[in-house]
Length: 61
Image (cartoon, rainbow, N blue to C red; front, side):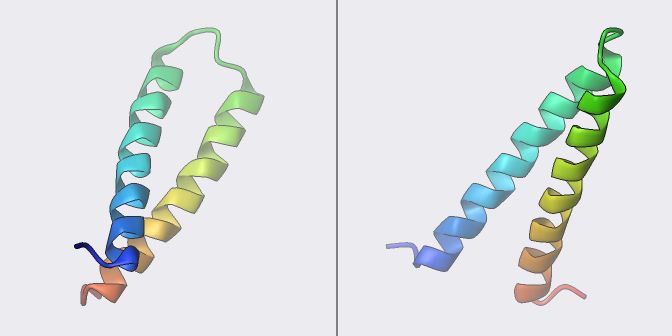
């Protein structure tokens, strides 16, 4: 069985991929508003912090 922390990290990494796909769509959509982009950037920053924390906990950096 996968320890809870590993399972949580796997979920966070999957969510990061989902967010990237969503942001890719926002970037090419001509009707995307500045507010939507600001919100997306804030979520990307949160996700990047999570991914960085995971990498550090696994010995990177």
